[in-house]
Amino acid sequence: MAQSDRHRREVHIIPAHEKATHQLTRRSNARFILRTVYESGPVSRAAIARATGLTRTTVSEIVEDYITEGLMAEVGVGPSTGGKAPILLEVPADARHLIGVDVDRDRISGAIVNLRGQIRARASRDLAGCDGAAALRELGSLALALTRASSEPLAGIGIGTPGLVETTTGRVYWAVGLDWRNVPLGEDLAKLTGLPVVVVNDSQAAAMAEWAFGRHEASSAMIVIKVGEGIGAGIVLGGRLYTGDVSGAGEIGHTRVGEGTASCRCGSTGCLETVASLRAVLERIQELLPAQPGTRLTGRPVTRESVLEAFRSGDPFVRDIVLDSAVPLGRVIGAVIGTLGARDVVLVGPMTDFGPSWLEQVRAEARRSALTLLTERAVIEIGTTGEDVVELGAAAMLMTSQLGLAFAA
Image 1: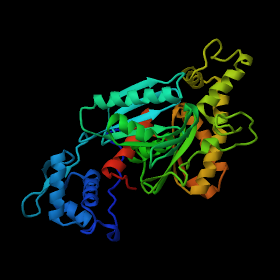
Image 2 (image 1 turned 180 degrees about the vertical axis):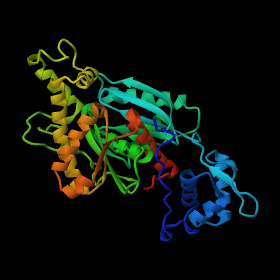
Image 3 (image 1 turned 180 degrees about the horizontal axis):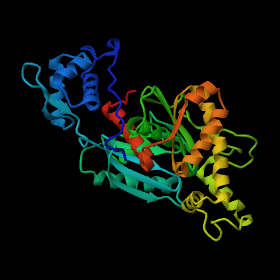
């Protein structure tokens, strides 16, 4: 959950040649005003007019509409500069709720999120043994349950799912672990719930969560890498998600590393996911466990929880496998830094639970894998939005598409 003391980015005032004018539509002006109040409120009508370049009459008319809709509220008075004290406006955190959903290979988790990234309610569904149409039914059931649970008007539903996703249409081209191919997910859920639906790759959703709600210093670009059952990256440039020409930007988990021969679910071999994901680590430990009688895992099931416990207790067998998995990940991150020249790299997902020693191994390999000048300036850190990262990111995407609340650098 986002914290109340999180870093807030300074409001981005659009240069004069981009400012909203009388020639733009009322909708564009309205979104511009809403974004200004959201980012810099409490703020007066006069200050909004100065920041946007719109007339005070236009500002007042649009503000009154937003107050009627419940998207703005008068929250007090500001200091007087000689005349009447100005009335201050802000966007209430619970003016609208958003549903954010994280579709994983084994579980669907959903949350009702307010406009400041605070979680108001949760629900989940177990996907063990489900894929294809069965997984879609579980997703629809969860979405309906959350729509009924919201106490405030809903702006829509955001879905973060593995796979190749066409965000503009909400179509999932291919989600390997879920056996989804060419599924019109956004359209189907919109018909089911009667709400606007945004669908995005889960790693790209995580990127938007860290950009919008994470406690990071402002920068022009951020790469967020989700390391869990699979591996993927989301890229945010200037406050906007970059998805690439074929909606596959950030699919680093299916980059071939070294001479690996392990089969990947994508049909290839030697992918990064086969050596650096949580699934790969658990499978490797399970494979080698019979020859390691001295490990703390002897006689215990190999699960995320048991492996994490053994790692934290200093079990050398487990630590070696976990830290070895960080090497190819760091190598690919170095290549990404060298390609994009981004300073901020944020790691999220279950593998980050292995903490500082795993992170340092990733950093060390990244530094060895690209131009020193670039990697030395890069900040590679663990994310701050926690386990709700995909739900929060899906909600942030909705805030942009439905309310125009783009998150500026």
